[in-house]
Length: 205
Image 1 (spheres, rainbow, N blue to C red):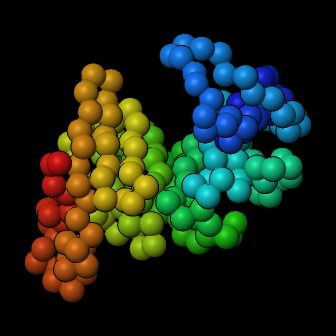
Image 2: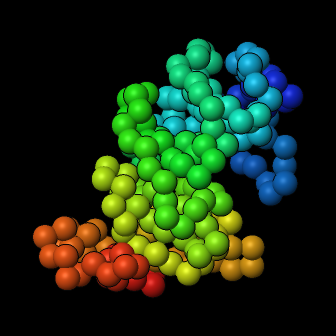
């Protein structure tokens, strides 16, 4: 499904309407029925589905609202400069100034303030923070440091399995392989953890 905002009106199309044998040329207009979901209480600046597609979050004007994706029913709301989903749709994080709040099942679970400050946050398999010193990945559950990387990304994309991550800047991109076994090993051997995190957490793919 694709969702967008036309001013404060939320609209949606379902690509499953297209039959598998329907031939489309590049650049051709796709014939889809647009569904009016309703109006939003804030002016949307960003929209994003939860990974399981059940919820959609609207963020703008220093606030966020989580709606059900099918009927646009208000599920949760609050103040936030940014909002990101975890790979687990029951978990998300918001940025409010230089602090981060992590929620689980719509209840606040943890608040922390990264030492490096915050310019932007990123969701996915790990929780990412961009600052003046680069990119830092944290564990969603414990907020423990996983790895610091000297890159200032514009955005981050995780593969569905969480094995690969694409770190994209204005001019280039890097694809890294996430080594979950190194994280498990470091949890029982602190010698594997430096001030920049777990050195073997990522490999260049």
